[in-house]
Amino acid sequence: MNEFEKNPQEKSNDIPHAVTGFTLSFIFFVLIFTIGAIISYIN
Image: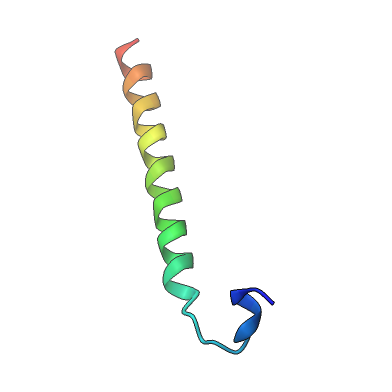
């Protein structure tokens, strides 16, 4: 029995993790898009 099976009813907050992951993904996308737009603008 590993540590995750000991307390399956534990209320670990998944929403902050989901929000954090989504936010980081969105920021990463915006960063890549901005870099592409700048390079496109330079050329």
